[in-house]
Every structure is written in structure tokens, then in C-alpha cells.
Image (cartoon, rainbow, N blue to C red; front, top):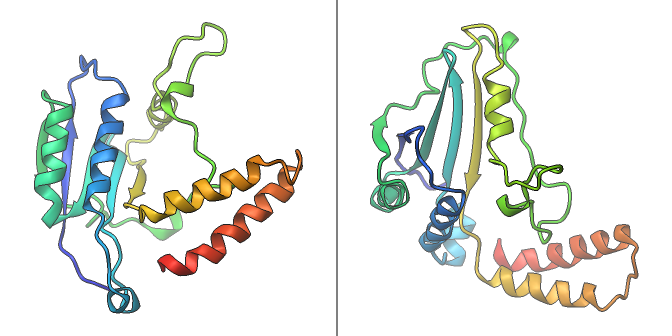
Length: 209
């Protein structure tokens, strides 16, 4: 694996911030720009695309937001944060997860992944709305509300959303697969559709390893 130096930024946005979820979408779109083509040798020895982790941490009854990323991307990451959140306070800190001295007997962790093939989109922020009033709701509201209900002052919870750019050629693969699915070959049988998509993508995956 390629060794990289990483850093962590703490992001503090004023409570009066009125920027909607759209600004975060702009950040994600910009991050795709650090995709780089790898030679077959780089892939063989484990070179991967740079990863960025957007994190929410609950500690000492306080919720904090962090971004973890390779040092060489700092200008891009920090510049985007200030561009989308001009009033934010951004500070470089030591990794908050180090030196916690957590007892494994009192800790639990899990990794979430998509149940359906990756060709299906996840729910996006325009789809979050109150079912009764039809008023858009903050996608993070439910998560933050749950974290704030932790009772013990020593309770901690960390959520990490790890992202990395994907080869643009995948878009071509996905579109081709969707066109085949949309022809109605499998009717309304979702099980067959998902099985075909997984097979289609697994065959193409060899190209991008």
C-alpha cells in the first residue's frame, strides 16, 4: 500500500448558518477532481485513489465535525470549506481518535454498505421531507438528535463517511447497464434485475482493479 501523511481539520459552522445541503454537494463534486489515473504497476502494488473522511463525533456531550484527508489535498479541502461556508471556523487538530484508551469490552463498531447494487442511487437531500407537511427536513437532524440522547458523560460515538473518486469510465458502464434493464427484459422481477446488475458490474470490475 502507498504511504501517505494525513491531517484532520475541525469544522465549526455558526448555528445561524443558513446554507442548505446544496453547498455540500458542491464540495463532493469538487473532490472528484483529485481522481488520478494509475498505471497497472501502481494498482498491483496497492496504490489507491485518495480517500477523504467526513466525520461526526460525539464526545463529552458535544457534537463536532471533522474532515480527515491526505496532507497534499489540504489547499483543495480547506479552500472548498471556506468557499461554501465563509463564516466557518477551521482548525487543524491532532486526530481526536488517538489516545482515547477505549476498553474493547465497552466499545462496538460496524461498517455500513449498500444492500442494493451500487448502480442504484441512495436517497438524496431533496427526497427528505416531512410526510405530513411536505416541508424539507435536514438529513442530519435524525442522526444528531440520536447522538444528543447519549446519557453518560463518558459515552462517545463516531460516524465516518469515507469517500474517494471513482473512475469516470464507470459512468459509461452504469448507463449501458441501465439501458439494458430499461428494455424490460426482466419484467418487474426485482430479484432478477439485481442479480443481472451484480453480474454485469462484477465482469466490468476487472477493468478497474
